[in-house]
Length: 535
Image (cartoon, rainbow, N blue to C red; front, side):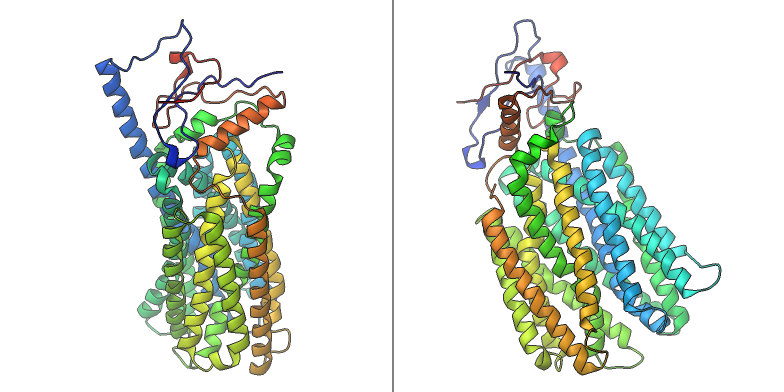
């Protein structure tokens, strides 16, 4: 039977974080030049390289967080812009146009997630991060400066749709690129707290991006000379879109100078992965991660778009209605943070699977409470925002925190970007379908207050039911890799290839000794799979 060539491998990690005793690699071939542990110069060089590797990994985590803050901003900047468009173009900005622009970002994100998931597995994390950054900057700036030649609102909205699609490709590509990089870097710097670190630099900053978008709108409202007049509102949405390019632009230089992670270098597949075998082994996990992501985005994205519309219908009508709506929207965004922080605290303690299941159940309970009590809650804006905030917080506590984390852990490094991107893309398909179903459903029964109330209650009933369906799917189909190193899954994937007679070669030829124990095979000359021996 053919065996996989793993020339670069050495110093394997333990299978679990609790079993992190010292390990030894296989002895190198006799003809190779090995570095002796009692060589002071070599030991100092390795110590320096390890420090550089950790610093680079930490920087990767930080800048991934900054970039994903930008993604959160992009996901939310249109939510309030849609309220402005309703005020500026009351006849032209219809629910179907709102849905179309919202779906443009989603369709672009699906393309980006699928495409860049493949790109970063075949060509490296760095190239994907650079291209996605440029796409986000380009799309946001185009949104800010687009002017229709015929001054037609219809032409304007089509142009915004195209620009948001370009932004969506970048935002979608950012998910597998940043998440794969952050997961691998977290495993190098904080392996025992990888889950919590990952949540803080992904879901927390994504939510903070939404809060930032609302703060930007409030600042722009406060600085408007004429208040909420049409001329000012046009300036506000353009500036808000344009500012979305600042954060991704700020990380471009670091990404240009960065290197791929040691984890990626060690497990990079020099040959095209056997995708048929991969799906044969990984399809149950894909059903779990992609299915739960589909159900989560089906609920969350439509709620994000029409949350401002719901609040706008509850606040006092008048010249400051938009500002009041933004203030309540800010509070609603802040309500999600406790759930995120609590989830980040628990994912490494009770496990990802339990946290995600609990989150689905709690959001389902809050959804039924919102649906059943909506006629009373709409009479008290503060109480409604608190209950709605708990609904969103529960969603972020569970699936919001854990879906990206689990999808970045349960797939081997050579396939991590591809399967993460596929899971996230199926999730975005759920968001698009949710937009097409739930947004029109709010006004399906009519546009008078009583009919809108009936439609909103129907939306919350559906959201609650979908959340409980997500809890069942999570518990039955999602694996729990809590406390397990990324190395274990990588090694099992290599063994799986050997068992099926697949010849494969892993690792960059120029990989240097790093924190994960990767070695330069030219220098050490290992040409067989290592053995792992605890000492």
